[in-house]
Length: 330
Image (cartoon, rainbow, N blue to C red):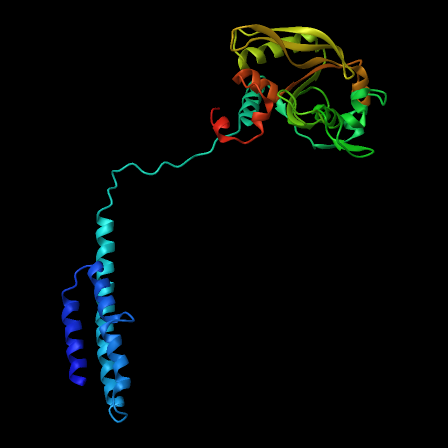
């Protein structure tokens, strides 16, 4: 039996010398070193020997197993290194790489950035304020009395009796006027919240951009000129627009701004963009600005409305569903 063990070991080492790739090496392992391989089967035959022969046979069989296993592992490492070297050499660096999907800003962010750039060229600074406000900044200082329907709890997101999510970015104007002496020239962007029923043109959260200018001798002519420059820069120089008389508690006189736009069928119609007007003297008095010395104007537009009109978006909900098929168009 020892001669048979020796013969098996020589055959295994001889076969191993003929191996030149990993596939052949795996066949060798199955034939000799697997659970049913010849080397392992050789070890299982030791139990059939007489007790006095088992120690010598076991030592001899284990020696053969170690020699074959060691030679197997050495060849395996050599073949693996050789294969890795070949794979590196076969890389064609001239082939085009895998394209990386690069993100882009949301259409609302794009619209805001474009507006800030337009007003920045006209000399406006940018002001920000908190989204959770008190009634003083959201209503009282803006000349919105307790009887006004805009203060109804059903039309606002109240947190407690005196705190709510701001319903307009006019709150930023109040904060700027409280801490800054005229002249003032700012735009105030941000999110606002109103419990509107969600449909194609309404959302309970949307974005506004408001402007405020205060100085001596400021008139509606200045406001009209600024709005016209903004509209023609953002929508195009041929865009038609108009003032329409309106009412807001914090401006007097007040007006709505309408644009004449075409739909896909080519039909033209007037579409409201936002409100504007001269700052009411009561607002100046509330924030400590001399209403006899200074005048000012303000306007506010919804960013979603501007984006929808510019890009032909028909449903405001598309802006917030995070569907990349839609957003990637802009």
